[in-house]
Structure formats: C-alpha cells, structure tokens
Image (cartoon, rainbow, N blue to C red; front, side):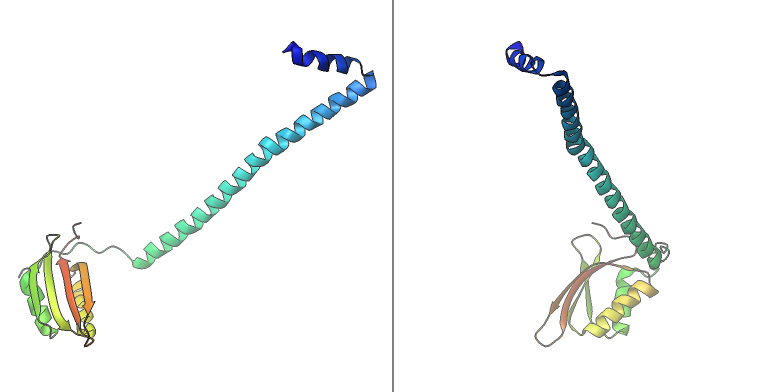
Length: 163
C-alpha cells in the first residue's frame, strides 16, 4: 500500500500549507458531492416512489371498498328448494317457454342444456332463478347459431359454486 501512497504523500508534502488546505477542502467537497449523488439522492428518490405507490394503493383500496359497498350486503345462502333443484328447473323453464334438459355438470352441480333458444327468454329465466329462487349460475356456455338462436350449457347450484 505504501508503494502507491508513498509518492502521493511525497507530492502532498511538497505543497505549501495553503495549497494543502485547499486540496483537503477540495477532497472534502468532492467526497460530500459523491455521497450526496450516490447515496442521498437515490434514497430520496426511493422514498418518493414509495410514497407515490402508497398513494396509488390507497386510491385503489378506496375504489375497491366503494365497489364492494355498491354490491350491497351479502345475501344468506339459499336453502335447497323443497321440491329439489331438478323439478324446480324444469318447472320454471316450462313457465318461461323453454325446453330444458337437465344433466350432471362436470363440476358436480346440476347442469342444464338448451337448444335453439332466443336470448331474451333465456336470460330472463336465468335472472328469475337467481333473484326469485336464489340459485347461483356456476357456469354458462353459449354458442350462437346461424339463425340468431343460442345453444346453451350451464350449471346451477343452490349454494356456493364448487371449483
């Protein structure tokens, strides 16, 4: 180490007292500038970025809470109909003018199939099942036919849907 610092110390000792003081002040200012630019500024930038992210997260949280509040209170889980799901589905579909075929869905719920049905009566029937009978539509697959009718497959549940 003295091999590198020896010539530097010799050069420094050859300066006058005034020059040495000026060089020490210059080295101190250079060190302070490097610390300011290399440590303090990045830390302040990280702090500002964290504050911005916290503000954005607060706004998002407020939006989510407002959306949840707009949904209203959660309704109590429905009790299965006394007559059973299959007869209820058939009866309400017949009342809506739909011909429904009930099957077992892949997820284990009561599935249904409708062929060549118009969208208005279909979605009115599904809405009535959800609001009047508190059933949950767990899955719904719709395929449009060339004659503007729909082929529909879906699954219903009296409680929460299973995955």
